[in-house]
Length: 473
Image (cartoon, rainbow, N blue to C red):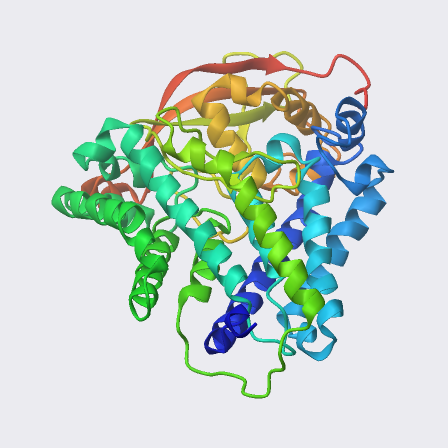
């Protein structure tokens, strides 16, 4: 079938595959380095307890068969190894079927992690990586040119990511319609970056231009992805530029980078492969069947996207094959932060010395400049942002975090910048207080050197201590 492949997108496929492998590598490395205190046998939300409560058909994962921290580590590091191999281009040197198996392996491994990751893996970019990774299985390697249907499905995914995000904004917070959301967003976003203070201090008319440009990019430009070239390339390029602007303005894990990678297959990049053979019949049948399945599964995401009650970041099947996406349907006007502190005093007094725990990414010390952590995903820091919005977000894990701090748990402390207490002297009490944070003005910044100004709001958790030997989950 001459229509089945598009040799002119050979170079686009190559860039896409290497970019996706890089995102996979970051995701698996993040999982390997963070899982023990979050999900391990003695973690805040242990996987063994979760798999006992959740049936396999709802959360398919190899960890339903058996779980141990060693097995999880093996899974995560194996994912790193396969991703690194794909990043190096190993799939180009093996037969087509073997290349598809190589791309299927990281998808299956990461699906096993996401489906037991609970709160820590409840972010939209987890499903986005899985949906993108599944499509990559059917893109082929150097034996065949890129299949047209898979290229279309990748554009269809990018369309849903952008258009869904645009709709949720217009239907959600009125400030998006008034073009005023960016008066607040750079200050109140989950994890500001090194340049977020400067973005926040841009003139308000420029913020309105940013918001208007965002609406154009998310509500108009996505339709141009399906136009002939070079219009599709121009549309994808504009989306890439928008995502890079977001990379500069904050830390959104690998969300921006996976979106950039998704836009690449729509680019008409120079370079082809004239020696490519015709696609084998079995490959054509597999691609056709997969495309039909994914288009069928698109029904519920489309209904959701068109609904006035649209929801963000929802998976409609346990394999995360076709999902719905969106971000910042509402924007906070005020930033709150939970500040966690400990003391060595046996009985807390008014004059007790409380030492503050510093997290890696979330704001703490007002004089500490926000750092650059994306594309790495600091899961605990992100959930602390949600916990400040409402204690309901912290109900499942915050008590366990406090318990681990009272134990000076080594794995938990590795998620932080460090502990204010030496290894042999854990705190006797830990408390949490809620503060309001705002970026300093230019004058305050010059006079104090601080990036943030914070004001005490209320007690979040009263002083807490271990009642006895800490029980393990």
